[in-house]
Length: 225
Image (cartoon, rainbow, N blue to C red; front, side, top):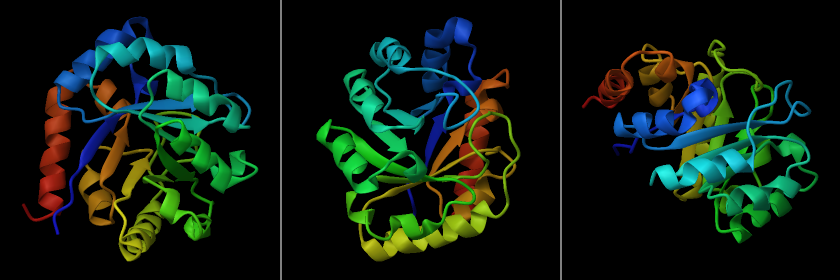
């Protein structure tokens, strides 16, 4: 069965001096989702954006806002991002004392819930919570910085995650984040991903539409279309 593919540019690599314009431009260029990488200089060694930035961007686009929380503890900030207009909120199990409770909190706020697995985080975290997930995010770099190289082992992890999702019979997006580019997105899709976070691969180019179109071409080829 043909999968629906989604391109999710990460604003981490956008020009922050004109962030609203960047978001409007990348959506016009064909992006499906706007991805927020939220880092706290505690769970990860970097500091990025908070709910106020999400609130400022929300009126500028109808595209879903996908918030990836790299913060610890995580529960305190979830309601703030939900109130700021997030559509999807995902977090790392290492940042929550009670993963099931955090997933429930996200859904109670009216958002879709996702769980993020780092390169060394086992897929076993999914075993008892797939029924509460709308998204699984496989990190193909270690979180904290943009522009890193794709970790090849993530392909096998994606294949295994796709198998678990299909066995569950549920509609769960399988997202990948880290080192996604035009020249590897087809291989990543073939491993099972359907939602692709790309930061520098899009925002560091002069023509966002051409880059996104090239990614879609590779994705079509991966399905034999």
